[in-house]
Amino acid sequence: MKTADFDFELPQEAIALRPTEPRDAARLLVVRPGAEPELEDQTMRNLPLLLRKGDVLVVNDTKVIPARLHGTRERNGVSVEVEATLIKRLGPERWQALARPAKRLEPGDRIRFGHESRVCLLGALDATVEEKGEGGEITLRFDFHGAVLDDAIEALGHMPLPPYIASKREDDERDRGDYQTMFAAHEGSVAAPTAGLHFTDLLAANLRDAGVGIEKVTLHVGAGTFLPVKADDVAEHKMHAEYGQITAETADAINRAKQSGGRLIAVGTTALRLLESASDSNGKIKPFAAETDIFITPGYRFRSVDALLTNFHLPRSTLFMLVSAFSGLERMKRAYAHAIANGYRFYSYGDGSLLFPESPR
Image 1 (tube, rainbow, N blue to C red):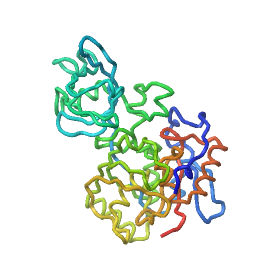
Image 2 (image 1 turned 30 degrees about the horizontal axis):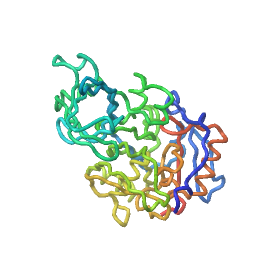
Image 3 (image 1 turned 90 degrees about the horizontal axis):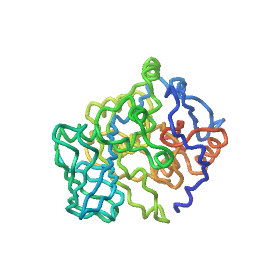
Image 4 (image 1 turned 180 degrees about the vertical axis):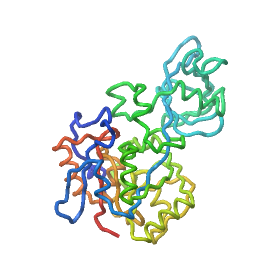
């Protein structure tokens, strides 16, 4: 298939710059292939009414780190402002990062992040550029390591808002809470699993009261989730890898729910990708602890997931390709056209959709 097949027009005013308050007041578009009506306007608060007793929701409990750092590189009396977004930890004091302007950096350069010292008594947060890649990525070796480095990043870092929000406004303290799900527990993501942003304690309690289970898995979302598909042919796109984990206890709980007739509902494309990576040919979930670069496009045969709760995604993106694989490309184009025409809010801070598969397993 061609990347252009997944294009659509989205008005800029449809892009949400702040989340709905309270979170579970967000709108929810239900997409049911083969049903009448095919599209149904709902709200997240009604999710317990849309699911069945015995169903199980699987959420991603990754935690976003304030991964965007601002600093200064000094070389031969010349200062250059640098922005580095941490994308992968390589060791106690080493991180891979995306840097701007990467062309002004060279191995051996020293970068000072922040100012004297909110960080610790030793001074500001300094790092050395160890390596430089071809795609704007660099390897940074910080002067601090372990917990001290973590504290410094927490103190100086900014939340890595998606480009379509960051280009319209600066991040602020409110984003430190807004861009984190209620399930966040394990640090490692540079982007939020945004379907989980719609959940509140009250909604979770109402789901449990309705007999719907909630299980947690971990997939650390990388910056690659925002990378555009540059290839004209979808088959030529190389998917980024992300680390995920499903414990044996969680896998057993999911499998028991499925064996009892419950449906498996992935909360977000990250949870879906991890579940599909961990499932065998019969749809049984296995314990998992590895990187996955699974790339789901139309024609993929889903093995385990019965429904998907997700936000509205970028045109020509791997995520729109995934939802099109799940519920059908033309149907998703109709759903997105309906959402635009009816004022749904798009992307990370936007509204949600509950998708059922084109071909139930």
